[in-house]
Amino acid sequence: MANWILGLTGGIGAGKTTVSDYLNKLAICVVDADVVAREVVEPGSEGLNAIVAHFGAQILTDEGTLDRAMLRSIIFADESEKNWLNALLHPLIRTQLLAQLAHADSDYVILSAPLLFENGLEQYCDKTLLVDVPVEVQLTRTCKRDNAHQQQVERIIEAQMSRADKCKKADFILDNNQPLEAMQTELAALHQVFLQLAEKKCA
Image 1: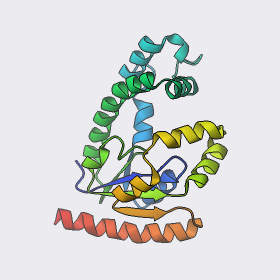
Image 2 (image 1 turned 90 degrees about the horizontal axis):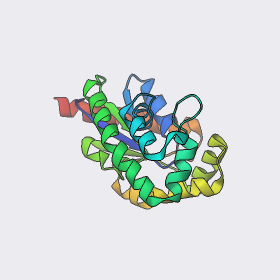
Image 3 (image 1 turned 90 degrees about the vertical axis):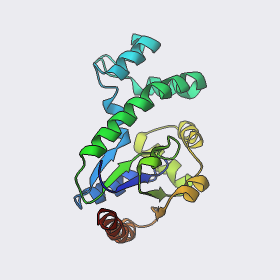
Image 4 (image 1 turned 45 degrees about the vertical axis):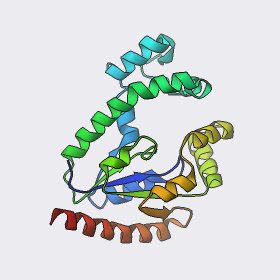
């Protein structure tokens, strides 16, 4: 496993990808839980086969891929189905995340996960960084980006740990409700801190 792991998290629409892309350009490996979550339900995968067996073939698009919009509407309407899906996917995602972390070889490595704290993934991290914005900013950004209804986005936010609780748990907090250049200046300084912490651990 990589010597020093930074857990990167933030609510939907907070700007985790902007942060991870910036650090990735500085030659830092990023293991992204969202990407892994898609990989474990690709056609022919154990995950997708189990989902089809449970929900039926109507959960697939005409191309044979997972119909994410249909699945999302099912699990947000039925708590028991959401629990079933989480019990299936979380172990598959965790196994794949740990395998990718083990192969990362940059000065430090980022584990990016929207549900880092909710799913206990911070146990694999040396420090955690929360990308923070007010809830109303999350709503505006996500509705615009995903062309989603506000009510659906509100449900997703409600299902995640509260902003206040995440702030209490995080080791570092990055305010992403500021101009991009100002945020990047702050992030560049944090990057130097992370490099120093990684160097100390490896010394």
